[in-house]
Length: 360
Image (cartoon, rainbow, N blue to C red; front, side, top):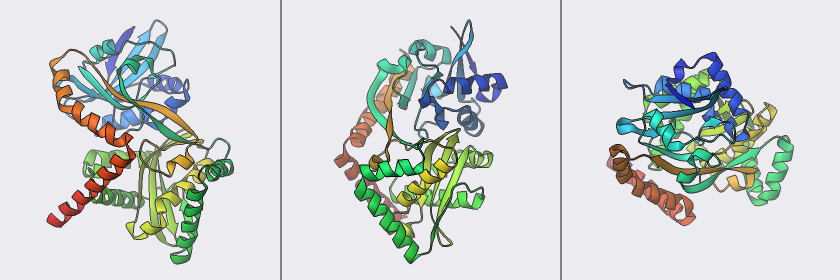
């Protein structure tokens, strides 16, 4: 096989079409995070002098058989495109394609490639998994009514609580209404402000403190690859969600809400309205992403197996990277997999955030 390395922005119309055709060979490849728009967008806004975003184009005698998008950092350390922002990663190729992972890395000039949301069924990286998890998916293919009936049966108490709080929000603040797709930049700025506040309150890294991420999200909003939804109570916006859309698939990305209305659980109310809006606008799946949200259990229709791990070659950069990251990754994985540890860590981060706020 022949492997060529190109900048995403240099892909021609024929290559982009082939990329999209390969996505159609496997339902799990339909994720917006695996679409060419995502890779090209990150390449455009996370650029530097070295041009860190690349795509390996794999060909055989019949033509292009795979695309492997990645980021290359110093010392040949590689990551998926938009690492830390993506809920699904992998090679865009038809099922059954056999590739040698280390040979692929060698062609890309990588000594190591870290992944944390990899499609687990992909053959090339299967020997390098260290942890396997699942990503929950909401199936709307039967329509919203069929979906909500199943959700009500799966978690009746959760559903009843959400609907009660929605009625109370309507009585206390104003009639609840939902805008599925807003093109107003002010709505997006408000969502990012809410989300930044959430990151600060919970002791997390504020993604919107990075200008390139702000520009990327604005770009996706302007081009329609991103969908911004807003939940109102009367004239008050109470929660928002910014997701990415690729055809019939929505990937949840940035949900946020106004803390003044936190007692009404506006994020959970908004999620039900998001499902209805998606079903009414030709979207049949919502990938909800990995995480500890209890309400996802009642909404989950199916699960996508994902994996965490790394592929490494014998290079000095790979060795240094292992020493720096492996202990931290193991600790983080243990916390994510243990509900008690997850809650304890969450409390610690929130306490740290409060103390930091008082100090500042």
